[in-house]
Image (cartoon, rainbow, N blue to C red; front, side, top):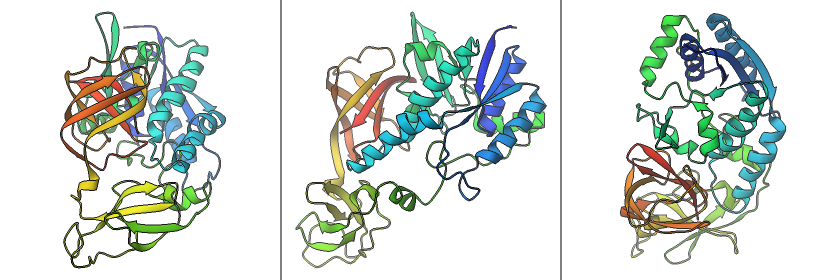
Length: 365
């Protein structure tokens, strides 16, 4: 048993609720913290923050903990959303969850929790942390289908030393069972999706409010033929299939897929405002054996060894891909994969692992 204080980030979902419950059972003094981080269009249609707060208060009442509400909307807009828009405007596809974790949940939230006198912070992330040989390691969760270490790769030693992940060894199905047994009404609540702290919404329409349309040509990469018109390069991403509105029929004699194969975004010519497309999922332009990354962040504070067998995720929804780091310095690394990778996307994160240990990663160039 412990009398130490832990501040738990409560979102109103089942994961953070059960994280708080488990810590309370372990004897921690638990304080819940609800973060309000988006105010631009806080309407019932899209933003669920009011209902989330109601759920947080209900859970806190059942568990028997106090809750503080804190507004990080200014920090979110400055540190996360502004960068999010800059990346899209530059033609890349950022991952806001990565920024959200490093800048809000484990920086602004951590700083606030320490001011409250906390010994540790905790979240409902599916990931693990352990101290090994004088270093803190970020680990994959036991529930591989829910593992979120990918989004946490920018955490450093100082942040991990103050963090607890109570769900590290628990499967999602069991989290819901625990919540149900305790009488938490969020036991069956649907998981949140969409942009971190903003939520699910029609994405192109949302982006258009901040990045106005800039029409240009859609061209076939193989021969430069104009196939249609796009509203703006920032609304498209590498590998995108839906929303191109150029049909599926291929002219005879043209390279690429079959007659009715779908079109995919293969690249962006930013200088000429041209969206490049190819036909067929396995077109060679969508396949690469290596990538370059910058904005590197290594959990240990040191870069991994080169020419060593690792695995990496070039996007969240993919299995670990065997690879090696061919070269790395303070600002740049090159990763070569054992097999061709599909639609490697500039702006997304590549995250490197050694077995269950997340070593860190960077942003794909």
